[in-house]
Amino acid sequence: SQTIHQWPATLVQPVGSPLSLECTVEGTSNPNLYWYRQAAGRGLQLLFYSIGIDQISSEVPQNLSASRPQDRQFILSSKKLLLSDSGFYLCAFSTDSGNTIYFGEGSWLTVV
Amino acid sequence: QKEVEQNSGPLSVPEGAIASLNCTYSDRVSQSFFWYRQYSGKSPELIMSIYSNGDKEDGRFTAQLNKASQYVSLLIRDSQPSDSATYLCAVRVKGTGFQKLVFGTGTRLLVSP
Image (tube, rainbow over all chains, first blue to last red; front, side, top):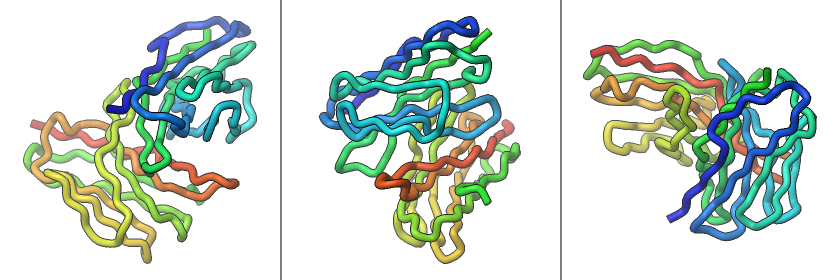
């Protein structure tokens, strides 16, 4: 079966510090991968999507970047966090044959 | 106009009642629609998808789609306190060379015992 895992589950980081969130998918090959952010009381915002290794598109200009070093690995990074980067970050995947997005467990980021 | 709109709620219903959750969308050519449930502090989980006009039933859940009115709804029969959560409507829209899933802000459902 297909599964997705992301970590860490929670982290508290000071302003200006770097960030790395990681996500891996199992049970399928060449998935479409996504990073979403959900700010408090707001909807899910698509940050990045990837249709293949080194094929990453950004939906909104921001302080974050994404990389896909392996087929089933997706990483969200920042060199210097801002207070406004706080939120709930969700990695997700879909398959070529499927139309549905499935989410990982999520990562709570608090920038202080 | 937002691409996907939902009433934020909360929608309060007594246990055993039918909960009706509504969603409207702006992109007339959208073909795929989804309902996700999100418990507080957790990630969204898929409840149902619907692609054709009409009703689609899965257990206590029924999704309804009306493309002419650009309207999709979710009915929950025999509501249980465990159904208390935020329900997210999602619509697949065409982006620049890519079809992306756009989410509404969600409707919070409270089912009282």
